[in-house]
Image (cartoon, rainbow, N blue to C red):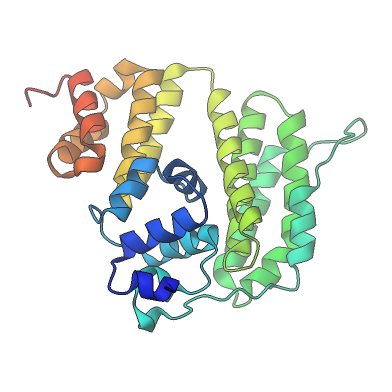
Amino acid sequence: MTAADELAGKPCGERIKFFRERAGMSRPVLGGLVGRSAEWVKAVETSRLQTPRLPMLIRIAQVLGVNDLADLTGEQRMLLSYTKSAHEALPKISEALTSYPIDLRDTEPVPAADLAARVRQAWDLWHGVRNQRTAIAVVLPGLLHDARVSARLLDGVERRRALRALAEIYHLAQLFLSFQPVPELIHLTGDRAMQADRLRLASMPSATRRSFHLIETARAYSLRNEHVATVHLLKNAYDESPDTIRFNLFARSIVLELSEAGGATIRDDVLDLKEKLGLSAA
């Protein structure tokens, strides 16, 4: 029996489970590679959540080595909605991502403000020109090098700003790499972007500031209806500073909202947060 025969008539969730198991991958591993939790993967596979949107389907297909999105969705109209062709600048970007400055004895860091300005220009390129990959490939290697050096050599507020720029540069690199046959580099850029952001957060001297930063990040995820990430960040915010989140109006309102309409995947965590924030009687 072929894979097509075995999957005939099955929904998207069961198809994802089939290819995940064929790849020898656990739910936590797949979830980590696409930026979601194991619980989210289970909810998709068991159809408790709707079929993921196209960008997420593409990420899942890349991770699982599925070349045809129709194999994941069962819908022939989605036959090869993306391309696996490589951009001519891919080798240069790959080298920039996998090389790292070691000897910095005679190196001067680029000021964080200059880095931020160059990152803004890079985003303007990405959003403002037709051949954005070609344009961004010209500036990306230099940006990566300078931001890595500055993140290592600067201190205090300047270092945090350099780490913020570095995280954005990795996000730009991930966009350049998307739809190209290098899933390992896509995962690498995602991991390094999150690592840079974690280092920036850890260097904040105040638990209140760290908690508030996590709450604001949760707000951004909630606007995209990514409830698992929202709750995860709010739990981390509580761990950093219970008082900060208890008196935050957004946190209180979104916890109440998700306790009523968030779904089974996050129910236990939301109810725990609701109790901790003193909202059980609300």
